[in-house]
Image 1 (cartoon, rainbow, N blue to C red):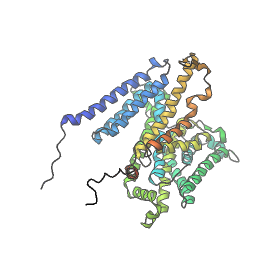
Image 2: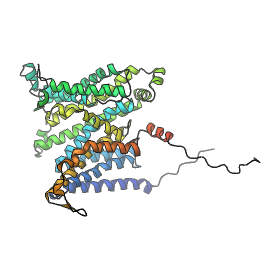
Image 3: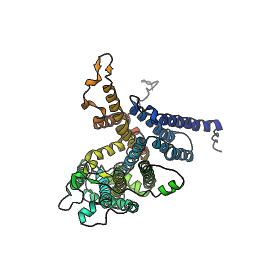
Image 4: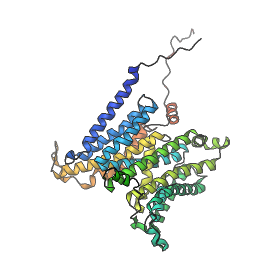
Length: 455
């Protein structure tokens, strides 16, 4: 007997989701372009309005993720948003480039930490150490600091060395991850978290004090004038008659460089997730003893998780150092590790799209929304606005209560809310989603009908 055939979807049913998504993208793009223009910058609350518009624009990627359309069409529309529309907005308002680049940097960090915490189940609270390793590696040789340390005159290295050192930073960070993993192989849970936290603090203290006897890191004063990658495409733009200042060119450059690295990170993470290595990490996360009994090499798999996660952080640390032009130990504190961990938890541990969404939510909340609220409050305070009902003048509002100063409190509240309302994260990993569904209380059994002594 033949199985019943599934009726084919009518063209209207297939086209309707695409039209809805396209309309949302067009409306969000037009609104954000309008808000990013110069005509509204003097409006009270402009920063907050721009933040909300940019959130709506980035939300189009999330709408695409859930839209019932083909994967090829999703990829094409995502590239249109990231490669065409967002750069147009960034040229009009370079602050949007800064936010988008920071989102990309933290997305790569969240993807790397997601390998360690989400895939392998190893709680790492010192992840920022690998970020610092990559940043200081290029900062030393890409500035005059190496001349001070070694008494030479061959530094900084030429700008074209940036790209070979990107791979070197990746390798050095991976080796550092293995060195961290070796002494903690027998630890798990809280003990592992404490040791990794100590490792992150050790790295920060070392770079903070390594200005003597050899001044390698310049201590708390940091390293400045870090070499940036070459603008190899600038002569071609000049030949075409396109004149763009270096600041805008570097904003474009770093945005696309970060976007390219994030793309590679997604590709590599997806390949690892579906490979035997990813399945071994999942087995270790679920039950380490059972995984060992099944013949999974715990030592190699744990070291591979630490190395893979650290390599992403090392590459992004180097890009961060070149982009900022200046780094110091305060850029790599314990709170940075907590911030990246909160991104993974908010997005969904073990979930690749979840890590990206978590990085976007936390970064935009920090860079735009909270600061937008603070700027709005300052503008209202300057105009002498009064809260109706209680007749309280905002000029008396203490500066200690500015929202931007409470980002850690907001992150903590966000984590508590997520733990209560959606513990699996915004976009959960399928396995975690099924586990939570199994743990949910079963429905009450239906009453038995017709029961009695005569049965």
